[in-house]
Length: 619
Image 1 (cartoon, rainbow, N blue to C red):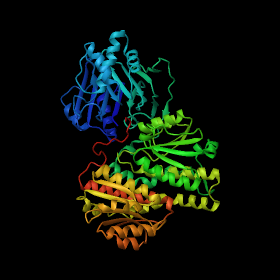
Image 2 (image 1 turned 60 degrees about the vertical axis):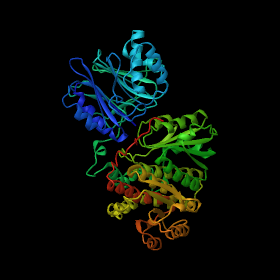
Image 3 (image 1 turned 120 degrees about the horizontal axis):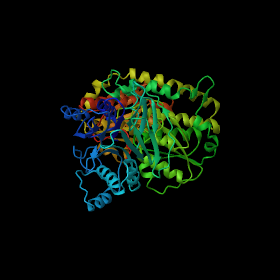
């Protein structure tokens, strides 16, 4: 949610900043802006409502020279989306310009206090309050910018990642963070001089350097052209930064010939899962190796219960993980919406394990939930995709997905990566607890290894969905049904359709049809049924018959060579046979493709659906 880019060095900053904003478009935004200090010492701010391309258009006749600058994509929280509320924001004197991700919760009281002291405001945002507060501290304490930022942030309640320029000090850039991600890229110019980059994540930086520093909460950094990089906390205690090498390349940030990132990422899933299980699944020795389990074996052997906290798609993957862990490891598992869990007074025991699942590792509610669990003595385990993310650093142990960057807002390969990682976790725990027979354990390991190939088969054998999907652009509603392991897949399929096509859709356990939703069935209602020839197959067949008798249109996901459900269905997707616990990894693929092609037929922007952000880093 929102995005920050910054640069100080010897190169022209504008091309770096604009390209960086384009890289961050996937996070979701409604306006964009840029601030530069040119060689004459002028501090300029340019802003536009809409896409980054509109900002580019608006500055065509403007002076965009300069070798230091900051830029921002905004997702509105305080104040409507327009150019006035867009970032960067000037201070009253226009000596400072600031960009900000996060929410300042006490901005109203801060603003009122400053207005009493004669300061005026142009926007409705909490961000302008912050830049005014910095200038207020600078003037009232007669201090430099770095000290003023420290003083200002001590008075702030909320979350922030900020970058700030000072007109009178064109050779330095200051930034800080708390509760919202910010990283510093460390590079060298062609003549060997130091240069620094800022980013909300690695995507705008990786083209220039793979050496980064992840700022920690309540850290403030100052960079200058001489190569100075000093980091302190709010108490002015000097911090020792850790330089990290990021594993990302530019090819992962391009569409690679696909029309959209979402479609590319759907097709990347077989290889992404091969990478995810590489080194963790030993088929020859029939073993599962997760260092996060091996290093904390006693915690998992003694735990009373596992609580999984997640949001959105990650919550659906957590439900599948619950089924697998309970079945394989015989440990009770609760799955919680992090946004609800954090505001309850949940009962947590010291021998509980709390697992945080988040693609970005920056989801604000999930991060807050695990901090609550930590305060109650629970052991924290993180499952996320972004190395060095806040959740990865806040947890006691964990596992990275290693599925590569996910740019499309609607999660696809991260979902399957989370499901397979939770399954690996369940198998690793089961091995330590000896809750599975050797025969069953070996069989699951063998089947695990075949899942990427079966995913590839599913993609290759469902290529007609683009034409089929066009028939459903008229629909106002969809219902998705599944049982057992496939109920969460129904939820995920419905969410994907809602997210990118804007068609209302709901997922239900198939047996719950008779408890209300069956009243909605008529000839205008498409019903997607996940009906593999496994588990409760006959019961699902019965559910389909109930829908057909009420003239509902059946779209089914069936096992290869199935004739019964296929004969009852209006449209059919096919998956290869696998064990119940692995069906979600295959069944979700045609549902992802269905949502994608329905959205395309309706002319939607599938990579950047309205009102949505890739990473929800504020409440």
